[in-house]
Amino acid sequence: MKILALSDQVVEYLYSPLVKERFGDVALVVGCGDLPNYYLDYVVSMLNAPLSHVPGNHDLAPVSPDSEGDHEGRSNRAECGDIDGMVVEERGLLLAGLGGSIRYRPDGVHQYTQGEMARRVWALAPRLCWNRVRRGRFLDILVTHSPPRGIHDAEDPAHVGFEAFNRFITRFRPRYLLHGHSHVYRHGATTTTQVGPTTVINVFPYRVIEVDSVHV
Ligand SMILES: [Zn+2]
Image (cartoon, rainbow, N blue to C red; front, side, top):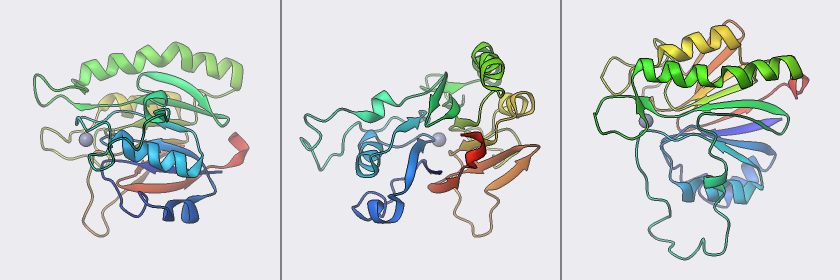
């Protein structure tokens, strides 16, 4: 089954009717943060697929500035699909969500120190262990905004990755860690890294992932 993962940048091509022609077979949309709700709403409405997403570190307009009223009467799916700090099941996949970035401003929303993110990870542990007992695995996909430390991250204060995510994937062994936050414009930049059984993917600005149905 196919997952369409999005992050950080509105892609005009996806924010158009073309998305249905090109990605009509996508079973789940995953948002890795820093995206406006109107964009997520549009894509999941067009694909008629469920949405699971986490917040990034930037506040964004909840509705499109040029389409006021367009969303009236529709449910806001983006608000329903927020899995930040949660472990959920969607389309048979076990997902966990940890949004936000490293703290680089004292008053920043969805910003965490390394220690704060470590505590957020361990708050998920009981539910992950319950999955392991009941379903034979902790989870399938960890959805984050920031990358792990040393993988697709950078040294500037806003783009350092979380060490807690490195420990998470070593301990809980998801099949995928999907993240955004690292804007890649250089051709040939590394966007996929294998860490044991976990494929770490920078989805910026979008990526299609084919998930093995053995696990679904
Ligand atoms: Zn970000």
